Image (cartoon, rainbow, N blue to C red; front, side, top):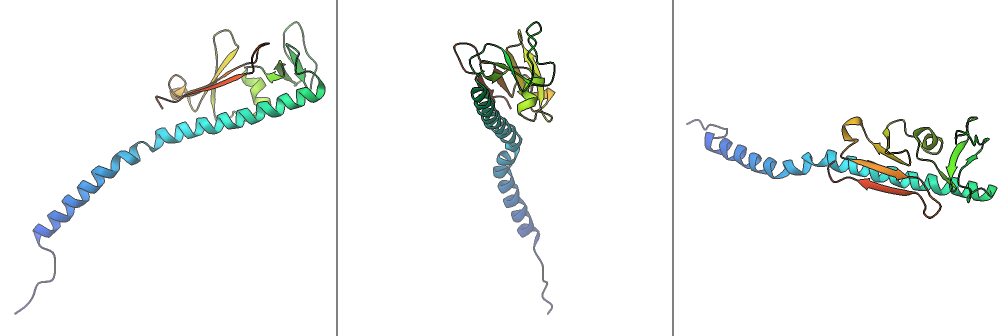
Length: 157
């Protein structure tokens, strides 16, 4: 008598059901990875920005310009337009101004979407235009009474 070597239909169905249950349990873990990646990217930008601010303030302190309300680091200050026309970095109280071209002097923002908020003392940075309203970082420039503030809004990434 010949013996058949193979799986029965019942065995195959059981294996398919077990694989289906395992994949249904694991799927939510994989779906949330993109959101976690966007949040991690924002926290990485925050750390880089804080380091860049510390270095910029240190350079300003060495030159003795950290207490000035507006000045340029590495260039001549245009008092009328509050700008650095020759490529310097515009500083308010020793920290970079909240403008894309100014922050680009201290940190690489080529892969980020940047927009100015309100009257120009706050800048919003997001991974893309799609995230500019729900998953972003804000940078508020320094004032006479406070250092610059960096806040992350990552609840809706």
